[in-house]
Length: 141
Image (cartoon, rainbow, N blue to C red):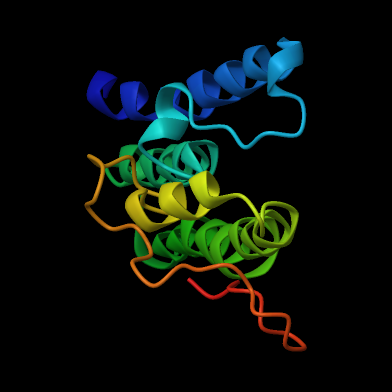
């Protein structure tokens, strides 16, 4: 139980780190690569997903029959955050906002989009600034 609970802290810790980072005037207009954000471009979304999977896993002992349909909840949260409203939207916005920032593209090439991993383990290796073609911003994951 407590191991699963600790993983859920990614959500709380990453949100706190981002809030603190935003209070510093020198960070205005910059992308965050501080704390958990150094290891993942969206550690808060990772924490959210782990939280919902943890709730499902903890409930497995008491689920019976059709109650196992509860697995739909963490799957839905993953799909919503990863494919619809969270990651893709923010990646596209960041690609446009930091199109001229070489440090951002290096960060994107070396930092996993979701799972906090060591540098170089899962970044988007072909990430590069948009070329100016219509709809060419690198928003795909």
